[in-house]
Structure formats: C-alpha cells, structure tokens
Image (cartoon, rainbow, N blue to C red; front, side, top):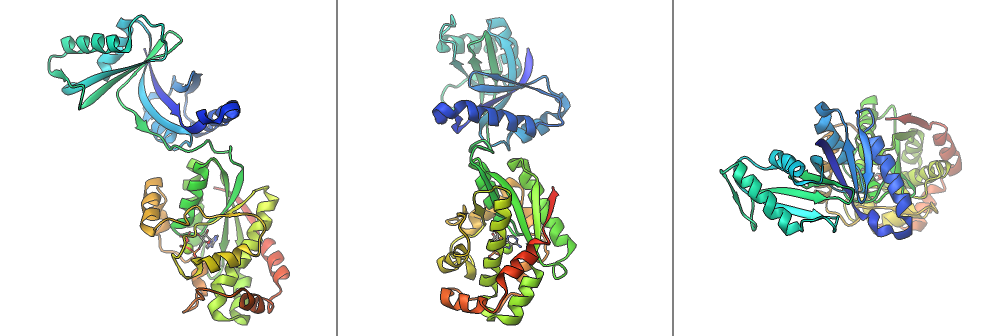
Length: 383
Ligand code: ATP
Ligand code: MG
C-alpha cells in the first residue's frame, strides 16, 4: 500500500488532437510546482499520482497542487493492488471512526470481477463488521469512502475530493504582460489570465523618489505571490517620474491620469514586444474610478496596437476583493504605500476625455523622447 496524491485534470480532455501537448505542459507545471520537495510523479490513464514523497511535507504538497491550473480535483489516498484484501486494508484507514458513511466505487476496469455495486456492498459490509459504531447512509452520509478501480491492476482508495484551481495549464495560451500596480485589482487580473493558461510576466511603473522603496517591495511581493500560480517570476520596472513631472508642468490637470495611462500603455507595448508577449493585461473594471470609463479605456487603447485584456471589466469591487483574498494577495495589496498614480492625482480627473483634447494637450510633450527615456530605466528582476 502506498500513500499518494491523486490528481485529476480539468479542461485538458476537451482539447482533442492537442491533448498530448496540453498534458505535456501540465506535467511540466506540476513538476515545477513541486520543485524542492522529494516526490515522484506518475501518469496513469486520466490521472496523475504523486508518490514516494516526503511525508512530512504533505500539507505543502497539497497546497501547491491546489494552485496548479488545469487541476480539476485532487485527493490524498492510497494506491493498492486491486484484490479485495488489499483494497480493504486501505479502506480501513480511510473509513471514519464514527457516524455514517457510504462506499462509492468507480470502475475504470470494466472487466473487474465485481461490479461497482458489488464492491460497495462488499466493502460496506467489511467496514461495518470491523467497526460497529458506524452506519451506512447512502443518501446523506457524513463521510465517503471512494474506490477507484484502475485498468492496470491497481485501485485508488480515498475519502475526499478536494477542489482544484481549475482552468488551463499555464503556457498553453501564449504570453501576456500584466501592468501590475500595488493595488488589489491588477494581481487578480493576472491570476485570471494565468488561470486561462496564459504565461504572464509583470511590468510595474514607479515614480521614485516620489514613491519609495517599500512601494516597490510591495509589488515584488505581489508578483511573488502570483508566481505561485503563474509559474513565471519575471518582473520589469520602469520609472515614469519624469513623464509625470512633464505632464504636471505642461498639461491640463484633469488629464493627468489619462495622459499617464497612455504613456504607460506605449511603454508597456514596447516592453511586451521585446518579450514576445501578445497582449497587455490590466486590472481595470468598468466604471470603478473616473479613468475606467469606456472613453478612458478607448483613449489608452488608441496608442497601442496590441490587444488589451481586462479580465475584471465586468467585476464588482467586492467580487475582486473576495477573489484577492482567496488567492492570497489581498493582505499585501492593502498595505499602505503610495502608488505612482496617487502622486500627482488631480482633484477632478476627466471622466469622459475627448480624444481631440487629449491629443492637443499631449502635443505639448516630447512623447517619443519621454518614452525612450523611460525605457532606459527598465530593470528586470526575478521575484
Ligand atoms: P489596481 O487595484 O490594480 O491598482 P486601480 O483600481 O487602482 O487598480 P487604477 O489605478 O486606475 O486602478 O489603474 C488601472 C490599471 O492600470 C491597474 O489595474 C493596472 O493594471 C494599471 N496600473 C495602474 N498603476 C500602475 C503602475 N504603477 N504600474 C503598472 N500598472 C499600473
Ligand atoms: Mg491602483
């Protein structure tokens, strides 16, 4: 009998001819997520098994598996030869000590001598004669004992299905560049795209010395938290200090945010192309703040040709907060350090800026020069 983590995958089976490719990426991702912990990873039909692992680190293994996209569900259980006595030795461990239970057998091996119903009855009877404090309840059992008879002469025995992260294996949907601030929204936006299989790298704009070192540390920490899901650790930073000073000195105050956003997009697009990223990703949500109107989004889209994905566009703030708590970025996001956007924030930002007005104000600036100057401050780090 061997203790194993059983991993079932999610949408991969939908992918027909591409299935082999999806499974290969998924395997690599599982291996990467378990890096540094002794284990073996085996693939059996429709399942992955983590075996021969460092038993003291089982909690860590489970929480890492829980973050791998493409995992539909997972269980801690036992791998045994498929004869009744071996199956029962595992069933005995998995079965509860008190209360009601139900045995649930799934038979991938259709030639197995017992049907699922017969296996349920056989193991149910054995459990009851082993522990008379237990009762069977097939409708609303307090505990389950699951038996999964595989095709290769083995069976898996476990007590719980734990919910996986869902989604698609990271790396199967191209690469995107996330504009990450220190706020709540953009980390969630990055998570959402990683969940759909996108390889996400991060770009942060700072306004040093108006923003301090701690503000940067906060973003590094957010990127690190995301990398547990995204499996990429690359964070680039660019200074927009001079751009903000120029905008502040020369342009209408109500356009500060709009103009800065356009510079961010221009710079982000250049960085994305260098990294072969196929889109920009932001944490914008329609109507959330003055700059996140359709007019605001249109004005920033107008300066780039790459698509801009806004996975949170239809989310309410409380939905985003809930998700950020779930993925573990919330506590870091709410730490009180200034972001560059708050530094020169106007009292009344333009809600529906007209493109002609934006362009008129922007013509007071050396756009190309400022973009290049900002790009020269590009720093790349691994979180
Ligand atoms: P967040 O919670 O992500 O900071 P927000 O609600 O504060 O979002 P804005 O400040 O309007 O919204 O920013 C909108 C989006 O622009 C962010 O979600 C992010 O993608 C991008 N962005 C804003 N500031 C920065 C920054 N300093 N560096 C990189 N991207 C940024
Ligand atoms: Mg913000």
